[in-house]
Image 1 (cartoon, rainbow, N blue to C red):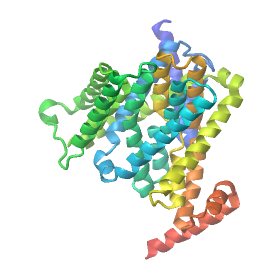
Image 2 (spheres, rainbow, N blue to C red):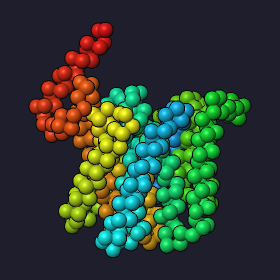
Image 3 (tube, rainbow, N blue to C red):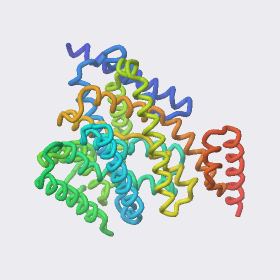
Image 4 (cartoon, helix red, strand yellow):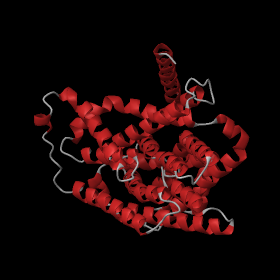
Length: 418
């Protein structure tokens, strides 16, 4: 393929991504859905502008790596440490319960243990990228709902290290793997403890960088250097980028670096969601739609129910817990990484990988549904009604939801006047 041909394809893809994102924004919907649709349109399932699996894999890995780097920079470790108990306990309970269910299912249906564990890990993870955007859309980033959700996302991102090591070492889980697990977890804990110090880490950026225009270049260089180094320890490049972002985001220069990287952040976001669309296989969906939708509905329903009930045990109002549970119901970008690791370790074949990609892409694409449902339960929490019957009615009755919305607006108005 000559350079002019590649450039023309790239131009059309970016143009369509911009148009579809704009249309979704006009419809008051998340723009990431538009990017996924653009990826589907120009991937192997659409016009096949990008049909090479190597190209798609490259765009996917690059998109995830850069996205997690930016996410790491934006996460505040100090905020997480201040309320670490609920997110950490919730994540541990979530992973342990899902793993136990997976082991039970593998025994009952004679399934390979590591296949069951893989799906248990995938179900335990949520999308940091999508959920941060959902929280921004709902105006909940700085509220209790936002703080708890972000804390859980940080805990889940930390948990991905042992998950990847377990999946990577399938079939050879001996003492050396346990040592690797302990070392990996220990390093992450030490990094968080170090970054959580009262004083922010000082980087002599002004002395090291004579020109501020170098900041985004050097920042991205650190991202790729960290991604390359962690590979030596058997950890994903994307997680290395996330750790680099986490480190930079908790330094004294955090705001300056964020401001310099901000202009390219939306491009990185587009790259990731575009890559999700490129990996999406419409032919696979057409041939296996009953399985795909059954898995999607089952995972979503289970995550909402489980998340809501467990969070309510931490003395969080049931309506608010349900709102957080709905927000966290989306599958995450690390699901795609785990699918790649599992494929390389021959735990799953092409069918399993395509199923995970398909379900994850659909889960990310239905963000408007999660936004609408979370909005309804959030309104119910303002009213102070935490009964199961009211939560059920607000989720499935449009008229009841409208009444609750009216009451919540009246409550907010009265509170603002006090």
